[in-house]
Picture 1: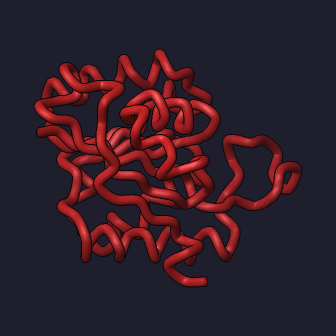
Picture 2 (picture 1 turned 90 degrees about the vertical axis):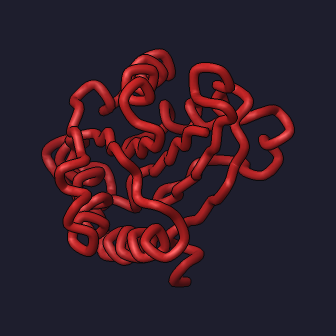
Length: 167
């Protein structure tokens, strides 16, 4: 079995508050949500073997709390520029390579590509379990026997959202 963890960055400051979108940091509430998700991960699931993360400011800040409380995570992260603004095809290609070397992969990035990835990864019977991929949401999808054989037929094992963990 292989596991995909899709984490959309937590709530960022509004557009226009920084020189460009890439540099937008998390808002105060986004920081709290990222912290809550990191603690949930440590309590509820196994840490991913590999993390593919957009290098944007808000994605780096979303994964930072997990690295701060589980130092071994730092060596597992790859910051990949192609995740920022990635299409579904780009994300699938990156995951094909990632799952060739790891059985549990977390991706940290942005919509709309991540929402497309989520709905294309799960079976049609699972689609009613989630309407959208809001900021600060983590969805854990399991593939039996593996990503290559069961892509598009994954089962949602867990889902959580930072907002629901603290609000």
